[in-house]
Amino acid sequence: MSSEYDLVQQYPWLRSLEKYFSDIASKPPTEFISEIFTNEYGNEIKERLLKLFKAAFDNLEEIHDYKTDKLNLYVYLLLKIFLYALDNRVITNRLANLYSKITYNELIAENSNLKIYNICKDLGFKINYYHPPINYGKKIIKEQTEKFETNFSIHFIDYLKLASNLRDEYRKLVHNSLSDGFVFIQNNRLIRLIQEYVRNKLLIEETKDKSSLNKFLEKATEIQDFKNLYEEILSKWAERKEEFEFKFNIDFEKSEDLQTLFPPCVKEILNKAQEGQNLIHNERLFIVWYLIALDYPTDNIVNIFSKMPDFDEETTTYQVNFAQRKKYIPYKCSTLKSLTLCRAEKYNDELCLIGYGAKEPSERKKLAHPLNYTRIKQYRTTKEKEFMNKKTEEENE
Ligand code: SF4
Image (cartoon, rainbow, N blue to C red; front, side, top):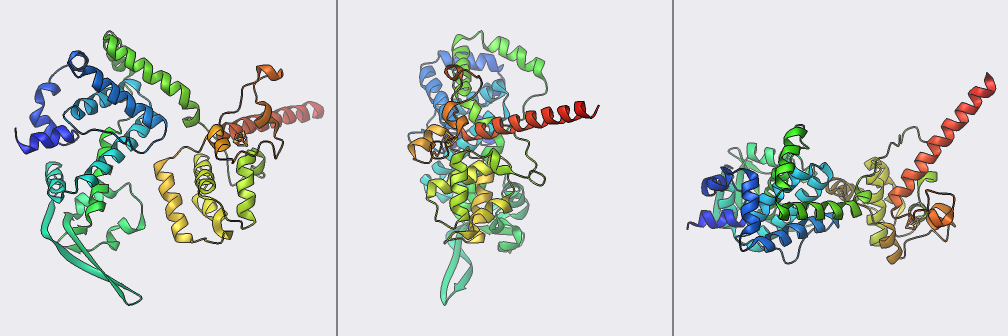
């Protein structure tokens, strides 16, 4: 078998997939699924797929024992089928992020520029490969000279296509060296662009054609192994989705007292930052992820850190933008408790301490996530306002 064939097995998102595995493409998906689950590696493939979903729902960024062997191809194709079947944008995003991050780590670990070149060629990019690496510039800071060298330059059209969703300042074309329409790009930055390509390959939209999806599901769930796996993924998702699917409607321009919507753990960190106290790493991560989840404007988030001793506006803005793109989920209550960041008792907060949902304490639901705190508070505030407005109207009649 050719090395191209081996490469596709390892990285099944390559274009050559169609060339070498056209037999799979020509099969109806249900036939393909049935064959996979009955072959000798069926159980192993199922386990790997489930592991991917679990890791994505746990917000992990890697799977330490991930294998890119010949089964990887089947895992990838099944993953695409399951993402279609689940038809859920949040799940798709999580899996696309995780899978592409795994790919990035695999490509970095390869430490083979020739392989990266072959991958780029396979993907149809116009790319130049220099061996030995070429010098393309230097930077002098405080009399120290840093030389730039790379093995690659990529045509600017391909560069722009790949980098269009990555908004870091340093990726802008104007900040990169160009020669004859080719952008010099350092090896790990090129791999980062390949990661973005892989992420986009998995980002299928929720389908509009629900009747075709239902027909597919009807047929696919006749295959017992598919049905079991599909239901197991859905049940894992049901355990975690509350943390992912928060919907907020906060108008930051008009809202007068956002503080009333924040749980004690958030208030505490904001107060510390306001007082210019240093925040530990976990406090910083949590507050950024929490405010991003509420669509809090970037400038306001950066401003929160402005009084802190080590504040650096450029670095903080970069980190906030990075977290925004990654869509990290803020820590849940149990994690905050284990990090000793829960402040329910200090603030004697009723919602945190005795829960919500019923008057009778024994029937109340326990608060599991700080974002849920904000959602409930916002809901209550809206109801109170509606009640007050109605009362005023009645009194004026
Ligand atoms: S119970 Fe949850 S929301 Fe309330 S302070 Fe503790 S961690 Fe924060």
